[in-house]
Length: 222
Image (cartoon, rainbow, N blue to C red):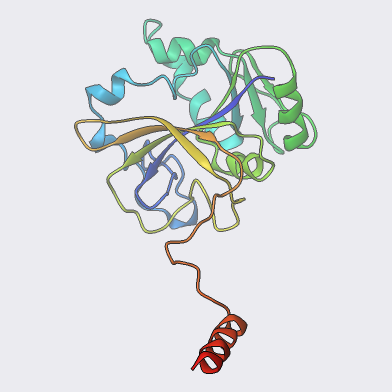
């Protein structure tokens, strides 16, 4: 079974909405579109393996698809990211789009969770979600995402669409790679690691019954 990898940029407080520009996604009155741009540097440019679609098929939500379709096909042919994204096979989740213009793009049919589960079971390259917050929410709830490439930017946005919303399914993750850019962007890779592990820093305390028993023993001994 091939892996499903979610790649996204988030603020320190987990917001993933509109990192690329003011008009990318202003829904909900979001006024901080383009918040990732000032932190871009050579380190980020060199480490695009989680966001460039290389050697993977893409799984995209409608909004992310429309943003990409309006931009990447028109970039220079020698741009490696454009070359990867334009050539990649793209699976698009949408209830409203009827026709896709971007090369190698097809609509997912029926229930999106079932459709992506079927893709994972089919032979082929690993699958990669880029952005597509609503799609991530649905697939995370169904435990279909195997790996997260998360770039955390040193900025607090306060509100906006988040990578993990309040109703996210609890899950354990394992950090397998991490590095920081010169501007403080932490680029991390996490694998799914089962349920949330639990423990306690507080030593076990005796129950009320045990305390009463010990008190009785002390009185009898005295």
